[in-house]
Length: 156
View 1: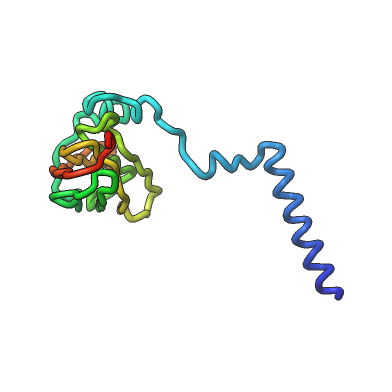
View 2: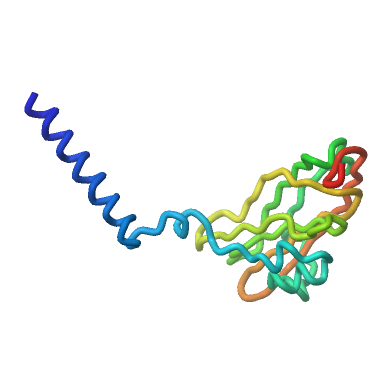
C-alpha cells in the first residue's frame, strides 16, 4: 500500500507542476505543436502570389527533388503526393497545385538532421501541375509534374 501512495503523490505532483506551467504561460502547448500560419501565402489566389508570399519566388529547377504523384488521379479530392529532397540542408518543403483556388496546399518545416521526406494527400480542383519547392542553404529549388484529374476535386 505504501508504494501505491508514493506513486500517487509522484504523479499528482507532476500533474500539478504541469498545470501550473500551462496556467502561468510558461508552457505554451499551441506554440509547441504548430508553427505560425502564413495566412497571406495560403490565401493567395494565384501561383505567383503564393510563391512570393511563402518565400519560394525565383526558385531554380532541381532534379534532386523527387516528386511522386500519379499521372492520372481518379479522384481530385485525394491525390497522393510523396516528396523527397536530396538537396543538403533542406529546411522546408512546400506543395503547390497551380490551378487550385488557393495554390499553396501545404508547407513542411524540418529541423537540422531530419530526413526531408513528405507523404501526404492533397486536393486538386482540376488537371494541373503539382509543383514542389524546397528551401535549402538559403536558396530555393523547384520541381513539377502534371497530374490529370478525372473526377471530384475542390469544386466538386
